[in-house]
Every structure is written in C-alpha cells, then in structure tokens.
Image 1 (tube, rainbow, N blue to C red):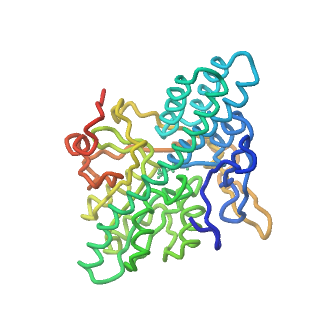
Image 2 (cartoon, helix red, strand yellow):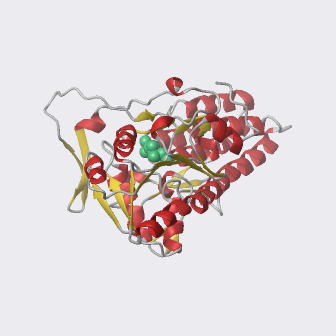
Image 3 (cartoon, rainbow, N blue to C red):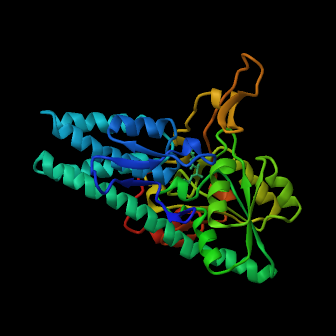
Length: 368
Ligand code: MRU
C-alpha cells in the first residue's frame, strides 16, 4: 500500500542481497517510518516477539522468511536438519495465538523436506517464503472483492456515508499488503462508495490509534480514532452500520480469536443489531483445534503500565499506573460464532458455522 507516493509491502527480500530481508519496523509508527534489515533467524524471532512486525498474516510471512534465513545459516554447518529444527522451535516460541506463524513454519519444514541437499533446500525455502507472502497479499485482495458488497449494500440502503467500526490493526501493516479487515474498505474507496471508519485505539499497544489511523491516513480514508470503550455508545446512537475485524485464529466452527476487546465489541454489536463480520485469510483457519484450546498470549504487564508516544521530536514511554501496581496483559480474546454475522474469506462470505465453512473449504478435514 501507499506510504506517501511509494508502494510498500511490510516485508520483502532485498533484490540485491538475497541474504537480507527488510521489514517496516512498526515500533516507530506513526511517528517515524523505519526500515529494518534482518539477516538471521534469531533476529527475525526477536522482531516477531518484540513486535517490530506484528499481525497474524505478517507474522506468518516473517516466519516464512525467518526459515529461509535459517537455511542460509544451516547450510554453513554440518548439521543442517538439526539447525532447521532449532530454527523452527525458536520461531514457534515467539508468539502463540496467531496460527499463521505455526502454519508458515510447518509449510517451510514440509517444503524443505523435499530437498535432496542443503543448497536445494535454500532455493526451496526462498521460493516458499515468497509464495507465502504473495498468497497473503492475494488472499487479502480477494477478501476485499467479496467484502465490498457488504459496504455497497449499506450505502445503497441508507443513501449516505457508511459508518464502519474496526478494532486493532487488521490493515496492510498486519499482513504483507492490503490487509484483511481493511481490504473491503480499500475496494470501496476505489469504487467511490462513501464511508467513514471508527478506529478503536486498542489498548495497550494501541495498534488502532498508531497503525490503523496511520495507514488509513496514508490511503486517504476518512476515519476517527475513538477510545476502546466508545463503540457501544456509538452503536446505541445508530452511528455504526457495520463492524469488520480481523482474526488471529478461526476454528472450523467459526469461533474467532482476535485482539483483546473484540468480544466486547461483538456483544455490543449483537445487542444493537449491528452486523459484525470477521475477515479471514485461508491461513488463519485452524482445522485442528476448538475455541477452548486456542492459546491466549499474555504479554509483559509493563505494556499496560506504560504508554509510548511522542514528546516533541522524542519518542518516549511514560508510566500511567501507581508505582508497583499489579497489571495483567491478555493479548487476545475469543468471540463465539453466535455473535458473528459472517466470515469474509478469500473464497466468499459465509455464516460462521461448520457446514458453511466446510462448503467453502471442502478439501479440509477438521480434526477437532
Ligand atoms: O499486534 P498484534 O500482533 O498483537 O495483533 C494481532 C492482530 O493483528 C489483531 O488481532 C488483528 O485484528 C488480527 S488480523 C491480522
């Protein structure tokens, strides 16, 4: 998507140096646009764990490129297979909730297993990482094509600007390009459908206030940042026509793990009769798990105690709780399918139930 006049992806392989992966270091946004070079799988693991890159799709792509960098390092040792196992374990240990990460690591391990020697494994891993990234972007684009119909219908029905609420950042910064929840919004913009986006700030890391607001601004989409608790009030006032969120893991029964606070928005939407849709690329379905088995990440409580922001030209962190305050930092929650109107997938929109999901994905065989 656009940053100023230039098109960027969130992650890419350096054209002149195939041992270097470049990422947008999102810790500095929206105040600074910083590109970071990644040369080793350990560095990629740190970038994922410490959220230089974040968002389910991008975490998957980053893991794919991390495995590719690991093949370059393993090739220089006599223990290729052991090194790759260690690299996979390292990446898998970084963040637990978004299934895209494990999916990408497993896809790389399966692909590399076909190689007859380390040099061939490097080639395969490089192609696989590129394919994971390209598919992520293509799946998000397809979500946009299907999802725009929802916005269009509302615009026709109300004959005014459509009011959309979103939570966290499920935009292009959370993927390789385009984004999931934002994909229908970007297509609606191309089709001149009038709309406005309510952006939940999304404590504690403020992905909405910092990232969604920045990327919508870059693309010229009208939007307003609101506090996390404002959505219910806006729905009661008739000021939200549609909620679209992303997802970090979706079960075959249509239950959704997404950024903490999503469940409360779904409850409020249900109470107010506001349609609540979740945008889900293929790699975010987990066919092997039920909602109760989804691991919910707990992060450093300091992310709750401190807030990062800009003070003049300086980026700084300030404490907002009393000294010694106990804090807890749950990263995600589960929204049960009964509160969800539909899933917007690359293959079409469906109700969030097993029969409808399996009709779109007949080749999958859920274990759970
Ligand atoms: O910033 P993260 O990685 O902690 O947040 C995860 C997400 O990006 C959101 O939950 C998002 O809505 C899922 S869609 C990528």
